[in-house]
Length: 221
Image (cartoon, rainbow, N blue to C red; front, side):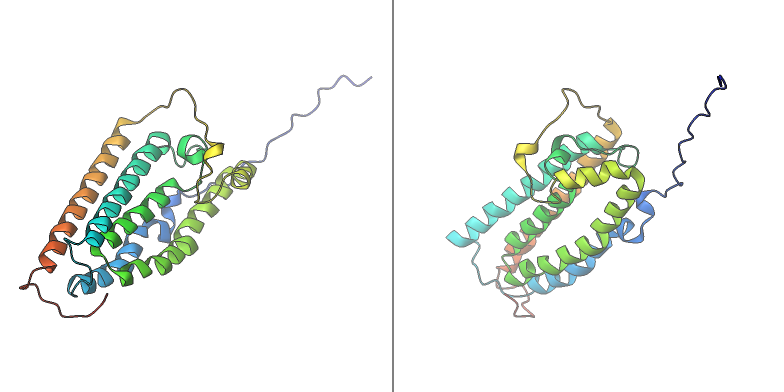
């Protein structure tokens, strides 16, 4: 009878993985949005608006813009409560991450829609399509590839049951308590303050554009 202890199974070590922020496209994702939207936004601002600010259509678009901005802010804060400071350490599947895999990018889309509503520009709204394609192709996929290498089968199973963007509200679940890093929450509120400042500045510029003294160098709807 062999009483020698069986050798312990040695779990294969995972390769040392880089932080997701080491990916060039992820690190410069803000620059990607700026390159797409800034030139178009400036051209639209120096074009005569086809929608009067004091018209019913103009009022409705402004209301839709503020609604989209509030959705952006709510998604940013909600997601930060669950993932702030823990993005690279654990796979987050609770709260907003239980209904879609990319609530922060969904919030960014809402912010871009808000800008399009305030500018009241068909061209700016149309620019959302190539911008979404670029983000999906280079930024979102870079993050997804990192998460798959980092969490392996757990992430693949998460992808199988959770939509990429469009929320599946029936799948929502959350723990009774969530640990929040106040530093990350403070950073998020600062980011939201800058975003709100940008939207207010945009509103001021749009109202100035409606004046007779504002230069209208282009003709872009």
